[in-house]
Length: 150
Length: 156
Image (cartoon, rainbow over all chains, first blue to last red; front, side, top):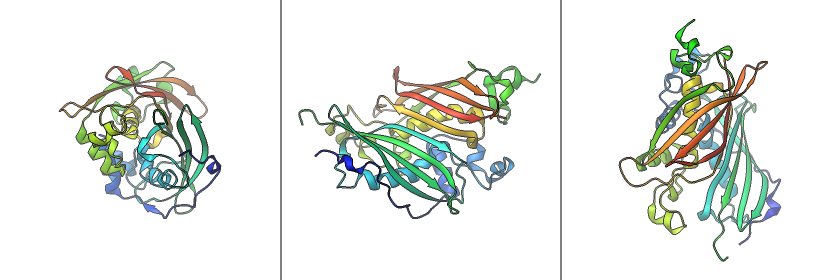
């Protein structure tokens, strides 16, 4: 099934707030091998002026991927999720995520292309805090690899 | 002159964010090698919430045409960022970070897994904002796995 190009420009309502836990940041940092005290120890983070432990730069994916999945799994879009690989990812931060933040994510479909049998989807996820102030913008490109002969 | 100033690539070795005035275009960040084993993929799946079976189920991975289980692109991206964040000390100093995934990192079911080798070089400086662009190179099994990998960091 072909991907539905009319999804370009579509925005999805902001997700329910995600409360960033200190232990979640520690767990994520540990999973990627980050030992920096700034990500584990609130006192070390406060010494740099942060309210609590600071998330590593790619932590945002915990919330942006889930929000993005509402698009990639939307049956009306017609993306073959079993054949999806991650093509590109970028983050642009207004400020870092710290424990205690309440994150809401709004996703917009920025581009849809079909190239050589592959469906290529570009998404932007805007992450805001409890006051509605921007924290970061994440862009991702996912590719559904075409099936040979289809 | 302190040792840290004599060797800007040592960066945050003294536990502080590197100074803008101590670096220049061409300054290399210390290269690091990361081992990605199956257990690391499982741990990352749990921490990130990405349970796509191509990252832990060899039967599924091969059924969809992959050679074997592959690492999460986001895990590769996160490890590559460590070359920057270990150097800059404060992860909050990273203002932008982006990569293109050019080749999957295949992770064999053995004790070593895949070796990811990452190096970084300062390729651009902006004096007004005291920011540096770090361009990253990442290879696994001798093949490039990330392209256009770059981070913008704010220095002291």
